[in-house]
Length: 594
Image 1 (cartoon, rainbow, N blue to C red):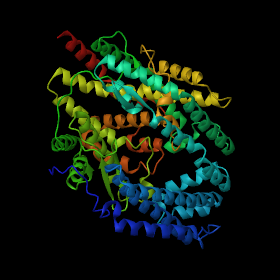
Image 2: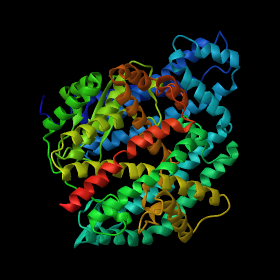
Image 3: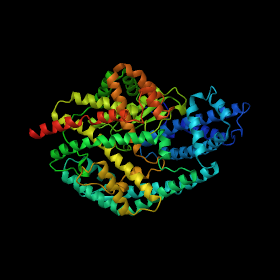
Image 4: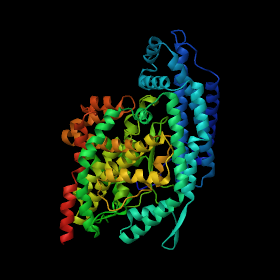
């Protein structure tokens, strides 16, 4: 296995941000977008005009794929060097081109909605479009639920300096805030990592109290942003005739409220099991009851380190025991240098996998630090890459899966490596640490995100009547946290509505429940893989390939034989997630007694 920890970008466009090939590529896309802008769809869809419709739709999909190819490449450049000003310029240009493509599609959607059903069905059965019929039907149905196109265009344009501007204000305000902690200036993000990750409880408590104070100082501005964003959305929904605040996020994630409520009802019934984990962890930390800043505190010791090569070998070898095809993809991505893993200054934070639809490749970005969590991140991102790999030959629009299904393959990979790590652990302290990371995830998805969801639903209910003050928002959040955490903490985080960026993301409303859905859906899939063994492999690939072409309930029924509107699947998934609680409690008692 090659030890090169840097990705290969030159095979996409040679020369980095000063690539002549990239400049030519974007110049051609710009010209082709201008051509598409000047060639509207024929007004009426008939057998005589069908060829023009097919050509225009195919051309638009092709432009989106080509622009994504360039956008992914430029995103990689910015990630590997945050000071690459030329790459940032390219990024801005690509955003403008993307907006122009969006305007064209809005016009197309309106035309879709006007057409006769018989003519439309004939169009989507056309040889060149039947692979994207699901997406086209979805877009036509959505257009019929919206305002007339001229009003939708106006709303989108007003949102740039209104709705979305509040998110930008929040980002700037929170990003600029610094405090002094332990004699050094800290951003709020750095301070947050202290109260989540520091092993010393007094340090965590001090960091959390300062964090609360800092957000209290920003709270009035945050409350304005949250209230006015919500006001914009509620007004827009009123004019579209959408009564439920969940209408848009459920459409975006392709499942029903019945399915969502089935998931939450099982979580409500079973998540109290985590209180046993809380009590055992509190004893290890020397306190009677966990506070907010204790929930993710480290316990046990996962001190084993891995070189990049060792981590890559571990991931490939253990994934191979479950599914050799996934392992073969992982090995290929490593060998072809599709992964940027070097730990060096100048890189952006975080990790991601991005697709390159034209060349049918992917690239993975991370900063590998030799830790257990670093190895999990590698496995996770390779899972995303595998998801894209098995879909690579599908029409581009048939590869567009939802946020709720985006974590299916990544969490599946991660589960394999977590289980293998636990089996390979050499001490009780190490096993305790591994179990704690798994149960921290369970707490985040079953409790933390539930609190966000409950808060947001109640907030929008009250926001229909009036704007909410800082104190009222604090009260709503405190109530939601106490319910979600089963009143199991000694201290909560009432200003979480201010400190959590996700509440201010305007591109994806209700940026919370899809995380829990995806986590549990993947665990349910993994439970079936464990139960069925090698016979599940082909069904797993078939499921991943259809994530962009089916409603979520239909996907689960077709490939898993389960009904997501009923509790059984969710019970299996939640039980698997909570299966580690008793083992953790037993280990904690053993460790405490030694």
